[in-house]
Image (cartoon, rainbow, N blue to C red; front, side, top):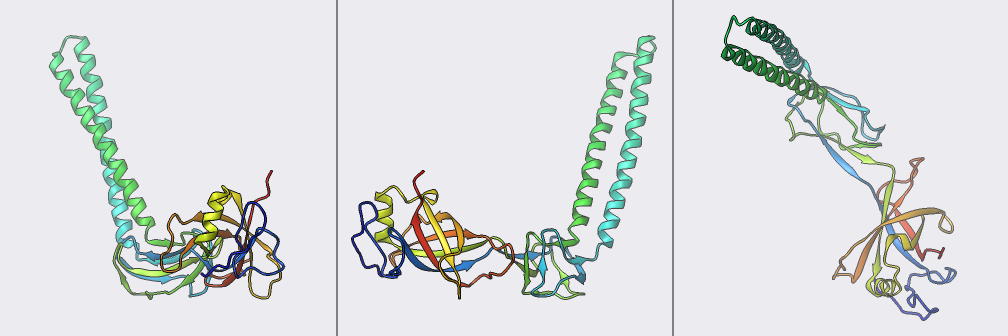
Length: 270
């Protein structure tokens, strides 16, 4: 972005060519664009889709059901793991009883110390097997839960790629995309000359700059945004630095890709 320099007052000595005539001193206006976090939701287990619970454009909250994968084989795996756990618990009980009887017999000097050590080892082995069985149940429960594909965050559904009956493969099949609606990011590019002056004045940190944003048909800058990123590198093609701010969107009125007017000013000194 080409920047025309104007002398202002001590401190910030640059004003961009895009700055409006009625802007407050030490302020710049830039053109930005909204962006959002988007996640391609993929299957974490292999199976046939038995249900797609949403349509493109639907609003979803974090944890809402998006799709279901046939859970029957994974339920069987869980039941088998639970059965192995019951067997491990039974073996543990038997080992404990035998170890207790061995200690009693040793006190009566009916058996030797070696037999007590042997039964203690059997008990330890049974305890380890029990721990493994419990872990297998937890793993089976986790895998079964993955047959319910849920929204990772609040947003809207986009680009549904799979239909009911489709075979999806774990970690490969893209089922759909969820685009976040809150918060949104506004990115804008600041000429390197302005960035240099901000650095000289000790203002090149997010907490020392105030960002306000306006969208189509809005007067002034009604949306306060939180600056959270100043790229450490200059884009050599445009001689600009990318800034990014977070804009609240509680009512969902804003969408990714919208054009925005961005007003950047130094934060008031406390």
